[in-house]
Image (cartoon, rainbow, N blue to C red; front, side, top):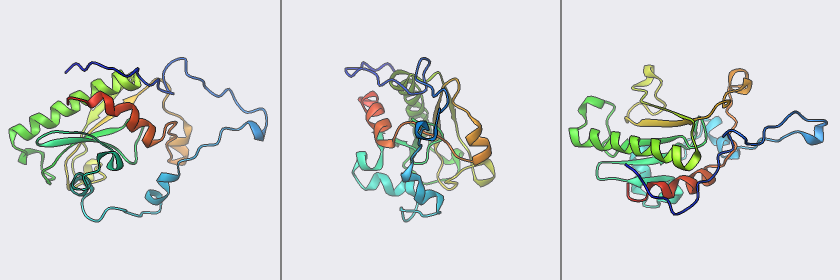
Length: 190
């Protein structure tokens, strides 16, 4: 689905030509990476009682809950613990861990929102690629195994580094608020 944009796209810090640190000359030249919103996640705290995919849409504050678009059967939300900036998910309102239990119209809207997300990530964040898929059940890698959801993870050349491999940490150059503000206009009419 093509979307007209009235706002200029927000350049991604990971696109070609973006500034890359060439190394620090001294300790004062080091880049500091801060991600304080991840502290609770790393401590194992869960600020949502119950299934987040069921609870968050019921709160009615899409900006606070990072919901980007709502459909009749499903919605799109920013991942609060993203793999990359712009990591979003299409989620059915129906609480189930069984993809085959979704009615055809629910599955169709879920897929259409995923397709829309791919276009928005390309247009608004200049993603050079997108990983689109589902992790079904705990053994399949699902972080929230009891509620199916479709991930759309934007990718750029050079977005992997040793910190992820050695430190089990992702470096995210944009805050969730910045990503939400960049993506939200792309979902108008979705």
